[in-house]
Image (cartoon, rainbow, N blue to C red; front, side):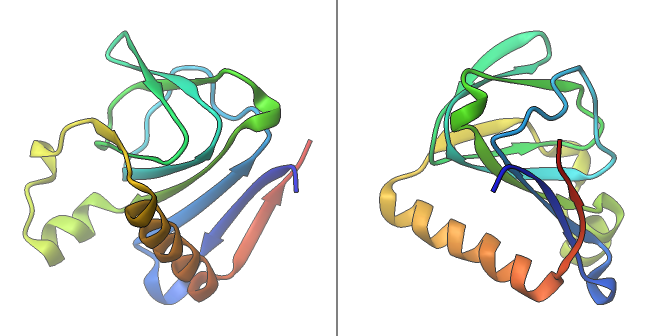
Length: 137
């Protein structure tokens, strides 16, 4: 289904999930106050971070630190699908004792088995959350 969906669970308000299927979204430079963890399900893009284009491919996982300006440019919108988890950095610092300012942008193409496990984790988070908003064009 073409469009963008957001998932949120009021009990776990420190995390939000976005699912984007075959739709252009945020191609202009922008940033998030949260730590972003993404999973590319299909397609490729140029992810512009710090003025450098990173070629992100299907089955990639990536992390974008909070407050890092970035822009995403899919190669083919009709083959572009990804999910993002946004984690509140204050919650992460408090509960995981991690210095969020030390998180760096990184990405990696996953082997099939690891990709399947991570994809299942994203799906389980979505099921626990429940859809709260759908954007379609």
